[in-house]
Image (cartoon, rainbow, N blue to C red; front, side, top):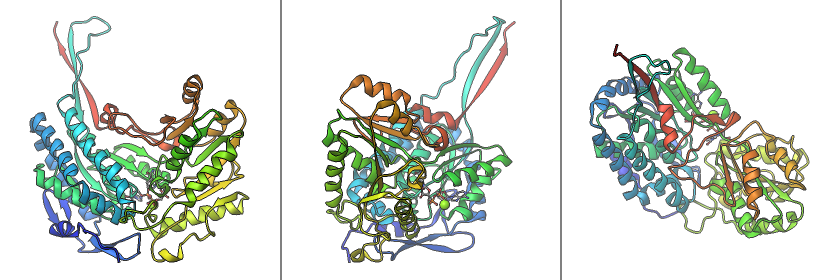
Length: 495
Ligand code: NAI
Ligand code: MG
């Protein structure tokens, strides 16, 4: 049994209930569902099984709060967002433990990435609240009109959150939504609802007006689908699976609500022969295996120049052999469990498919991948394959687990073509000492983010989002405000 400072007493204070219109309430049905600890498979807590009635109530509360939120001085709204960011930073230790418990990720990683970035997002967008401006537009035809634009909120936002970065994805969606003057209904992933409910506590604590932020836990069909279809929702922002994104788009058509989609990828990571090999190995390890590989940006298609392939693979393998699997709460853990039994099964299926399609396995320990000594938890050992071909499922579909595929290449044009041979386009990485090549190749890769001699860095000020089937609607940076705003043109006759 792992001894830890469980944050559950704080969570228990709100009795892990929904936040609707400033009230902590149970699901209308009275039903709850269990949240499991992915390191053991044991129940961790139970949360309300929100459904259509709860979504209706939350959307009504969010709509009622719109004029209240809009009437508040921008500086006061900014202060609330800032204070929320500050509280998240102050509670870093607790929130990191909560994410490690709920998602399985190493606590140190949550403390380094999830929590500080979530905090910074609220503070960064606090700065934008007072800077949302229109323009005065001189008419092209020179007629005597005074025309100006207003940047207005779209209204009620529904945020459908994935389980890989539970609190952080709430911040990605809520930060710019609220800064733009919208109100929001957050639907966390059913696998990882705890940090969103803790966020609800903090929203209440810092004093947001009732209904500005609402949190409804529940599963996809029960709570996500009614939110996506709701006529009272003006915009859905979603991160998750491509197929779910397509369902959400279908559901949006009834009231033509705005939709932003961040749908993952199949990102390439290219290592040229002149790269700093140790840095490339280190960076590629993170690209493939960070967060147990459960990253939309995972650079799992690794292309290594034939001159350095063997050296690269040897170094990467040495790293993989040293990886310690264990509970995310333990300091010595390098890699935690996957989020759920379903995900472990899915990833095991991809590993089996690679073997069946003829790939060569360099690291890993049997197709099922479940470690005996960690039985009960959803552990999957890091896997590495060579002799992969572009048609294999693992090269075309998002695996979302600790599985890397190494291919070789001989020349630049060929590797660019191989890297771009995907329907996705979220991210890409390249490693080279040649600055001209670096930017020449970066310009040709079809991806919303390209990292040169690094991988996976994020900053709140830098826009992020996909090309092609990785979705549309940027997150982070000033650009992330655009999908949450609509422009009104106002004409005055001066003749
Ligand atoms: P998912 O896309 O089905 O779930 C993400 C969120 O959408 C959850 O909150 C879920 O409750 C909600 N949802 C599910 N069905 C819905 C529906 N019909 N209408 C509205 N909301 C709905 O992802 P899932 O099933 O958890 O994971 C499957 C795969 O999706 C993963 O293996 C991975 O490849 C991908 N994925 C990608 C993520 C990314 O960051 N791009 C994050 C999570 C999953
Ligand atoms: Mg799903």
